[in-house]
Amino acid sequence: MDSIRIQGGVALQGKVRIHGSKNAALPILAATLLVRDNSFIRNCPRIADVYAMINLLKGLGCCVRWLETGIVVDSTHVQKGEMCREAVTGMRSSLCLLGALLGRCGELTMEYPGGCVIGKRPIDLHLSALRKMGVEFTESGGRLRAVASRLHGACIRLPFPSVGATENIILAAVAAEGDTILEGAALEPEILTLCRYLQSCGAFIEGAGSGRLIVHGGRRLHGSEFAIPADRIVAGTYLFGCMGTGGNVLLECAPEEEMAAVLEVARKMGGHVCCSEEGIYVQAPERPKPVSISTEPYPGFPTDLQSVVLAAEVRGCGCTSIKETIFENRFRIVEDLEKMGACIERNDCCSVTVKGVERLHGACLEARELRGGAALVIAGLMAEGETIVKGCPYIYRGYENICRDFRELGARVTSV
Ligand code: UD1
Image (tube, rainbow, N blue to C red):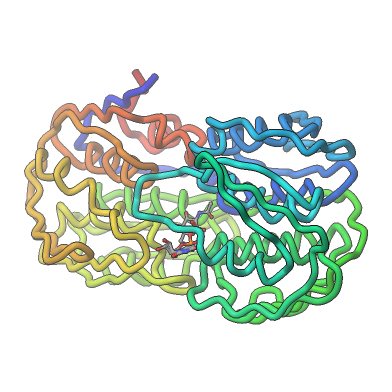
């Protein structure tokens, strides 16, 4: 099932339920290592990255069981094992095992983490912060070894609000001796969710949700039951799918309060957006109005939705300008969209102008990363005729069942 076949030209109509957030679930699964007990994580998405994280946890000695409503992780016994090479190199979020394992065991050896090929993605901010907390790093044969004979609190200021570095610092700080003061923390909602989970296990964290966190480390954590919130990026993907196809969609359970910048863009594109207890309702105009967006750390417009807006605006009724400021390699879909008749001008390495065209035609495309892959599926929905998107395992890393979801919205989509 490596490809998706789409018969395009159908406006999305109906309702779809938004599953649990990938970027919230992954650090929380890593955090269960700090709890020498059973954790019950509800609404955990059944996606490839979560399965990879579970394999890593099992390899470290955790017992993991799926139930209908979530997942139980028993981390009573954890050994300082080797982490499965493929799972680490294939997934950037395996990096949050760094903070969690240092907190639990004080040492680890791992490959450099992989993930989507959307830029250089260095880990210098993670390493320099953890060094301040007493961690020594050495490298041999492409593997990273980290040892902390005494993990201690520190005053850390991040020069850029890295999501992953903030998560790693919190995870290590919860287990460290003494207090950690973190300035310049990322504000992404997934950080607040991680803090709430750790607090539900007994951690003492002040300032959760702000850029200045104080973590009082060293408390013994206990198991808890915690629900993963709905995925704001999946909700945004379907929202812009609706905008691109001129549809009419209810995004059930979509996390409205985390999507302010996204909803503002959808409104500027001409969408009628209403929020209720049920979720977010969007009604799109026939063709999106042009917009000008620049990706920013939260609460700005998320980089993870840049490609889906780009895809939607390919059939827009004007010139849209898009600037990518977070990752340098996030315009890899442009060539594929051009095969469908899109008109896109590259201004420089990090900005493009999309000149909307009236019609797109189906083509054979290749997903090269997660969100770009989803954007190509949306372009297929907008095009006349048949589109095949190959390389779909990238998409399955972050969407439980994108074909089923689009079918529920009336699209003619199958995985082949
Ligand atoms: C997380 C998200 C990803 C999202 C991104 C930005 C997860 C699993 N992934 O990724 O979906 O696109 O946030 O919202 O939550 N950087 C450095 N040095 C470092 C760390 C980061 O230079 O040590 C740079 C990166 O190269 C990038 C920028 O900082 O240019 C943002 O990275 P970061 O916020 O760390 O993103 P991730 O945690 O990898």
